Image (cartoon, rainbow, N blue to C red; front, side, top):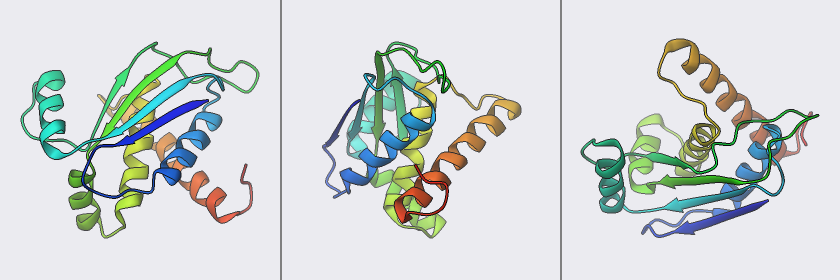
Length: 157
């Protein structure tokens, strides 16, 4: 599995944790080990430009996803085909404000946003309440499982 992470923002981020999370999530979602993923962190100006260009919405946002091969989650017996998942673009400056409001560390916010972006790459959405419940439930399960695996807790991979 190729996971490329580039931090072009002015905020220092533990890229190793993001790498471990992405690897964990892709494994849980049975994505082929030869799938490629890119995670890019940019400043507010770059994120605002992308937000306007691709979503036609003003101002910077926290995360954008750009799927490539439209891969979908697999199963244990039938993993996703190899291919290009796409790009997740994070804005640590926006995430920092959200983390402060939520009362948790920046890395926790970035882990949540990375998981959220990854689920979008795999075709999940939250356009209606049923889809939102499904996506956010999977997101929560991945984050809880990853947290447990980082601590070496029961049921970890």
